[in-house]
Length: 278
Image (tube, rainbow, N blue to C red; front, top):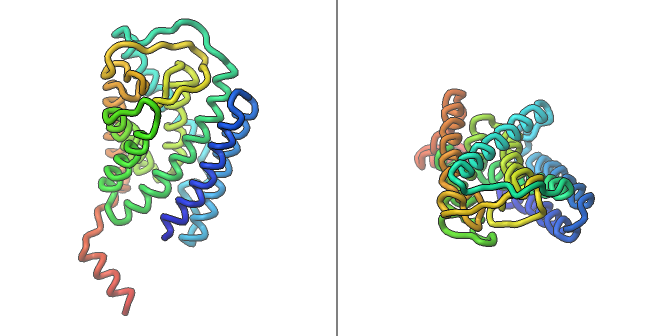
């Protein structure tokens, strides 16, 4: 029930914010303001509902160290996507036609902030964290990563390969980032940095969704496995490999820090239930 309650509260904020942002498309200032406001309200709603349903302080979104952790995530996300697009460009799959739009980049900043925060709260803060209690870290990573990929089948230009790519490079990587740090700030920053670099800087399609022009007028071409095709660079093999490598790096860190939760055995659950009933 707590999963459903937490999901319902955060999803309601996300839906309202998404509708608001889409209603003001074309207005740079309002898109930026509404996007950032959605991100802030979603964080407040998450902290409130976790306190109410779990009777604890939501340390995964604690204010202390939030700026530094988010900043590190943004830098990693931007650097990772830049490496992916550079490799695509080396084989002729990406070119820059000229400058894009600073106003478009600002609008994308707000849109991507809302998307990164709400998706991380739902998929890593709620689903991964609660599933991990029963399925363990690896089980939760696999299950929520698969679900994250499947959800992207609803996007324009979606394909089975695109969903698999998202499941591996994003679903796995972002869950591993949370497991390694036990804070949502790093995966939020990483998610935002990757998405904003893709659309806001390099002018690429993000998960099949076109938006305002970014800082550069970029064009992708060539085979889907190289460029990602209409779904964008996230369906490129380079992106999948980059995400898979970083997932392993984060999981090694999680193991070293003692953050990997083992799968709860059925016998242990039965024993715990019997103890509570006595």
